Image (cartoon, rainbow, N blue to C red; front, side, top):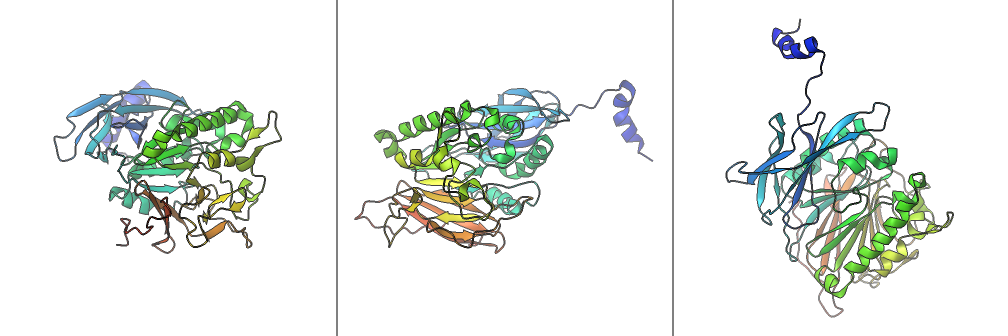
Length: 439
């Protein structure tokens, strides 16, 4: 028998025939829109209600500041035609490197209390990232470790390199799962093939990245790095129109051209890109990256007009590191261009490399499990692992970038890599320890 109190709580619905008000915030996540002193808070409710964030300095008076935003109705294009309201509030005039506490919602329902640290806008800032792709709501092997490390304050931002939500139902579940990460640090994304349904509508509506392209491509600056996010999917889903492919290419060209102006490259010498499908890989699955004439790398000559690829563009404008996922493995490449190794030197291949360094980090865990490698990789493949895991990256300063891989299978870090950009006569020795759970 149901308790009497339950009947009382359901009485208005039963008598009037109207559903309850679903105004409780969920799927809270942060993003950085590239403006120093700002942070965007995004969340979802099932019914329309006010969009408000109350916040204050950590250790100070709780919620003594408030900001309002807007909610937009999103209707999923699937059979259910599920409706939800996406709320966005931009916090401004935040004090760099200051810690804040906040909650979001309205008097109809508030979220849990979360915290974040406003991003430091100094050029000498050494930002720390966790990065990965293909983390799903089923078999999310790296999730628990990432949750703990984020809440320990190990990261300043997360880079999720595609494949994060398929549709409204799966997207809802995934966004609930990552709230314990994404509500604490900016969760920066790019689209993958799993976001393609209904012209990427779930991805376009759920995330709040910089720029005016519905999060499909954008760039932002942090410390001495210029970070560029883009969509590899424009090369594959031409049914949504070829104009996106050419618009993105022209945008990338203009963005990289601007980043390479002497005054800009002097301020931010590191250019880092993130896109879902790699140009190169040694997996045994016949994906685009296993082919010499990769569409992402060399473009599409089978359409009119032909579409240019991205390798020559990134090489021409001196991209330093290219981050990828899609392959459910970890693979580190030697500096490579034109299918040939372009090491800095035989003794120190990653010191002043002559081409971009490619990192594939797509083994955070999803329902498709990990992939297999081709037993005969090409010479540009430096290291490979099928362990579940994710990557860490720190832009240490204007001359040194550090990366390491975390194995969830082995419960340890491995594959520690420095990429120095220094004059030939300078010392490349740097004493540096990444904050790690293995201390």
